[in-house]
Amino acid sequence: MRVPRMRKVLRYLLMLVLGMFVLLNLNILVNFHPENRDGKMLEYQEVGNHLSGDIPHVQTGDAAKRSIIISKNNKSQFIIPPNSFHNSSDDIPQSNIDAENLTQIEQEITRINSEQNIRNLYRYGLKLNHESVVVLVQVHDRLEYLRILLDSLREVRGIDKTLLIISHDVYLPALNALVREVDFCPVLQIFFPHSLQLHPKSFPGEDPDDCSRNMKKEEAVKKKCKNAAYPDKYGHYREARYCQTKHHWLWKLHHVFEHVQVMSNYEGLLLLLEEDYYVTPDVISILQMMWNLRKKDCKECKILAAGNYDKNQNYGANAGKVEVANWISSRHNMGMAFNADLWNQIKGCAKEFCEFDDYNWDWTLQHLSSKCIPNQMKVLKMKATRVFHMGECGVHHKGKNCKPEEKKKTIQGIIETNRKYLFPNTVSIGGYSGLRLRDPKPNGGWGDLRDRQLCLSFVTNSSEKVP
Image 1 (cartoon, rainbow, N blue to C red):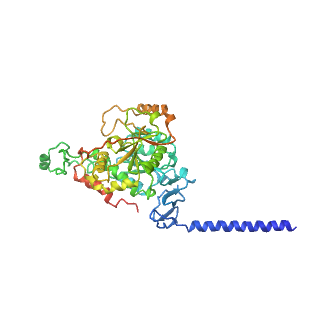
Image 2 (image 1 turned 120 degrees about the vertical axis):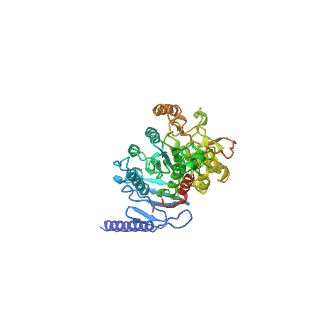
Image 3 (image 1 turned 45 degrees about the vertical axis):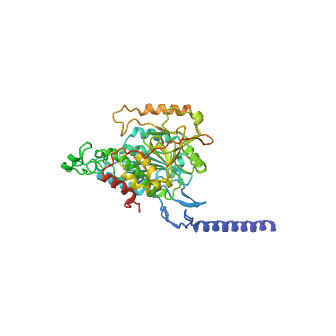
C-alpha cells in the first residue's frame, strides 16, 4: 500500500514543480522589456488588440490579436503571429465610392493611409527583421500590367513571408478589386494624396490659369499665367502628368520609411518595383544572398539591382554572378533594393533632390550620387536579370500597340528555359565596371517653384504623420 501512496506524493510534487516553472516563465514574459537599437528599454503595454510603446504598433483590424516587438543581438524584429480571425470589411477600400466624387475619394484615401490595415495577416502573420525583403510597387492605372506583375509575385518563393506594399496615384475600383485578390502574402495599400486625380483643375494638376508648355516667357508674363516666372532651364513650363511620377516616388519612400508603423526601425531590404515589371521565382532569395555578399565583399555598395536591361541573358554562365559598378540611372534603376541607410541619405539630400531641374526621379538620384550623397553610389547588379520590364506603354510611350499578354509569354518562355539555373547555391562577384558618369545634365520639366516646394514638403512636413 505504501508504494501507490508514494507514487501519488511524487506525482503531486512533480505537478507542483511544473506549475511553479510555468508561473515563473509567465512572470518573465510579462515583465520582459526588449531593447531598441540604441540599447534603451522598450516599454509597452497591451491595449485591446494592439500594443503601444516607444515603437508604435500597426492597426490591423481584427486580423492581428497579438504582436511583439523584440530585440535580438541588437537587431529589431516586428512579429505578428498568424491567427484564425479574418480581417473586417473596413480593412479594404470601399467599393461604392463614386469615381467622380473627389471629396469622397480624398476622404477614403486619408482613412486608408491613416489606418494602415494589412490584409492576410490571419493567414501568414508578419515578421520583419534585418533579413526581410519588403516589396514596394508604384502603380498608376495600367490594370493588365499590374495583374501580370501580381501573377509573377505569386510564384516567388518566400513571398508569403514578405510584406507587399502597393502605392497608388489613382483610386480606381477595378485596381482595388485586383489588389483585394492578393491572397499569397500580407498586403498594404497606400495612396499618393497629391495626385492629378484629386486635383484635375488646380496644382499639382493642370490649372487652366497655368502657362502652356511652349509659351514664351515674355508672353507668359504679359498673360500673367500663374507660373510665368518659373519655366525650366529650356524655357518650357511644367506638364503635370510628367511631374507626378517624381513626386510619387519620393512621397512613397518617405511614407513607408517614416509613417508606416510596422516599418519603424526596419533594417531589412526594400525592393522597388513598378506595375509593368515581371519577376522571377527566386528574386527574394537572390536579393537576400546579394545582401549577405554585400556585407562581406562590397560594404560600399548602397544599392542592389535585381534587374538589368541586357538584350542577351546568359543564365547558364551568370546565374549566380553579380557585377560591382558605379550606380548609373539608365542601367541600374530596375528592381532596385536598399535599406533605411540609403533612404536617410536621400532624405538628407531632399533639397538637392527637389530643386534639380529634372522630372525623372532616377536621373535626379544620379545627380545626388554625384553631388550630395557621400561617394558615388556603388551597386551590386545581377548579371542574369531577375526583373523584366514589360511595359511598352506608359508616360513616354503613348499610342503604341500594347500587348502585355504577348510580352508575358515571351518572358515566361525565357524563365522556363532557364529554370534549372534559378536558385543558385551561391552568389559571387563576377566582374567590376569602372564606368563613371559626370553629374548628369538635367532634362528639365521641373522649374516650377510649386513643384519644388511640394516635393520638399513630403520630407519636412509632419502633418502626414500618423498619431
